[in-house]
Amino acid sequence: MKLFNVYALFDVDIVKGKGCEVWDDKGQKYLDMYGGHAVISIGHCHPHYIEMMTNQLHKLGFYSNSVINPLQQQLADRLGKISGYDDYQFFLINSGAEANENALKLASFHTGRTRILAAEKSFHGRTSLAVEVTNNPKITAPINANSHVTFLPLNDLDAWKKELSKGDVCACILECIQGVGGVNMATPEFAQGLQKACKENGTVLITDEIQCGYGRSGKFFAHQWLGIRPDLITVAKGIGNGFPMGGVLISPEFKPFPGELGTTFGGNHLACTAALAVLDVFEKDGLVENAHLVGEYLIQELKELQQRNKHILEVRGRGLMIGVVMDIPQKDVRNKLIYQQHCFTGCAGNNILRILPPLCLTRDEADLFIEKLETVLNEF
Image 1 (cartoon, helix red, strand yellow):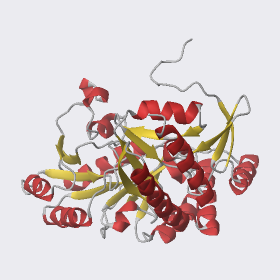
Image 2 (tube, helix red, strand yellow):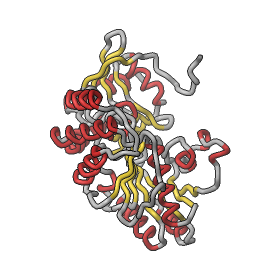
Image 3 (cartoon, rainbow, N blue to C red):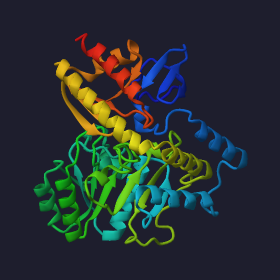
Image 4 (tube, rainbow, N blue to C red):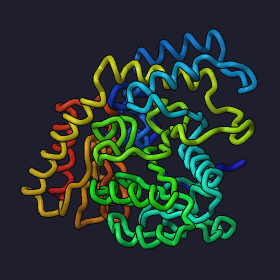
């Protein structure tokens, strides 16, 4: 049997990792400035994470949601405290797409409506509703194109208010820092105005914090830079440091009924252990603050590099979610970074490098990345 060939793969076999470094099967070390799509939050193979996961596997890896799992409540308590949302409810699933699916479903149950507003250049996942609110027709199959969604420019508050005033909008879904779309940032004025308009029109506000949340922006959630408090917040990626997991933080205004949502694997014992280990390390090592401080440093260093190198047009982002806009194809730059400088980065569009390292990145590692990137850019 062949694998279904949908991925553009680099010819690298990564077999080991530690912190912000990974090694291939030939022993070559790489600086990881991408964290596997922003998934690796506390660093590769953190010893506390390994210890907790190993201990849990010796006890129980999985049982279904037909029995009490105290680890779920422990996680909800810890997450509520660290994020500032201890009055919210928490529903656990397996991925970011699932988190957005369930958030949109909750919004529709809550309002009785079906229309959704989403931002141009948005990415919210690849499953049914998640891909429908993703602004990319190439990955939206005909069966997913159900005319539920109106796409509007990010930060154009008047356009969003005009649609909301029609009174038929179920939910607005927003990445406060767009990932795949190019590290475009929502402004506080837009976010606060949108929240106010949603409340006035009985519409649910959802923030997709799957990539920009969980400490990456330098606050626990990216929307906390904007002065808003959404009705629903979706999380995944960094929550389990690589273990498949997602969740929805749900306002107390939403009252659940038996069977409203459900999942087989979501919130299983091993997944909750992974998430608890992540929060332990966040608190012990101050990783949210580190993302803020090292992120500010890296952004400043990239802006100084921009002054030395004509190929950098713009540096965007906050914390350790950074976009480097160039006048040359990102593909050519990434290939040289990987095969010559042994450094992983991500991308967005045709000409943007997306920088999403583990939140334990140090200033020395940030300096090393600047050296590698400058070496590559000087070759063009």
